[in-house]
Length: 106
Image 1 (cartoon, rainbow, N blue to C red):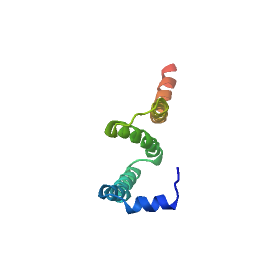
Image 2 (cartoon, rainbow, N blue to C red):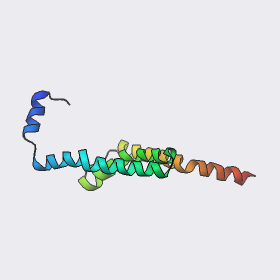
Image 3 (tube, rainbow, N blue to C red):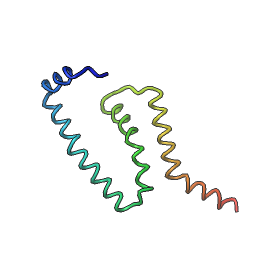
């Protein structure tokens, strides 16, 4: 919910040292690391193999919030993570499974 400019100004004037560290970490360290790894993966593997891994971002975020911060996840969040993982597994291994079944029929 948006509270308006006054709320934003209050939040910015009362930011803690840990809050500043968190913003700097996310803005620089995590971003630089993420883009560096992404670039290295794309130089070694085709984009069609690397791109599906981006589907893991929300799942890892949910699991990290649950494991590290003790967040309670709803049934719909668990189901959503399971659907994403099933889709990723199908994308990564589905072609091999389909080809294996096709050759097994001959």
